[in-house]
Image (cartoon, one colour):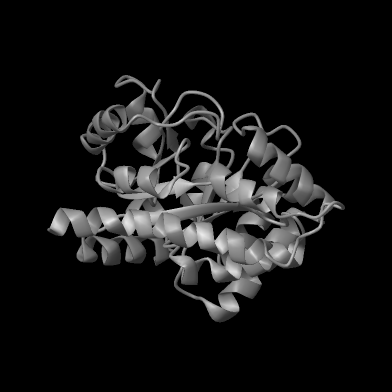
Amino acid sequence: MSRGATSGRIEARFEKLAGEGRAAFIPFIMAADPDLETSFEILQGLPGAGADLIELGVIFSDPMADGPAIQAAGLRAKAGGARLDRTLDMVRRFRVGDNDTPIILMGYYNPMYIYGVERFLADAAEAGVDGLIVVDLPPEEDVELCLPALAAGMHFIRLATPTTDDARLPAVIANTSGFVYYVAIAGITGTKSADAGEIQSAVERLKRHTDLPVAVGFGIKTPEQAEAIAAIADAAVVGSAIVQVVADNLDADGKATPELVGNVLGLSQSLANGVRAAARKAAE
């Protein structure tokens, strides 16, 4: 296990997919969006809808990397009862029926700091969380959460961006574990689409620095875009497009309609099919 982490679901999943010759599909949902129970139904259904790993969002009041769709999801989640301890409870419930699909918590440091780092890491590991993406902790702050997470057996997944140059990249990679998350566009989530040619060059550059899988996210909205990314990276991550389906399936009171869960899972399945199509075409 790389760099001190001890939970093997992420490695096992990428090894399995490498054996199948295909990339992973990684959907993002916000915990408790639009409410705790509906969110759990989506989480529970995602593996059956083609999710290979899952990113579960942790709400924060100042989500500086998030675009309008995910910011709105965070506001709905707050109204729906989101709290960090309840997010961990969702993972515990999920693990009753699924002990194989990796779950990564994605968010910001403040809620984890307030919870208490040592307590948070212990509770997250016990609940069945496999990794963390904490977008506002640079490598210079590794002592805050990254190094304790690795020591506790939790993967710490770092973001690389189009502005991460060769001088900066070694610091970004140094304590990264599980996979590297490449942010395909400069800016916030969900506002622009990624250019496949630029992403291919970026993925190739990352792979010269690390043997970890490279996942690509930000700007992937359609099955066709997911297919294009899956042809050049180890995983395609989709968030804003999925949470927008939640927004589009609320009633006049902001409550989940009967169609919400099915429509979210339907989009997830179509995106997963796009990812899988890349492997089929490569094999032809």
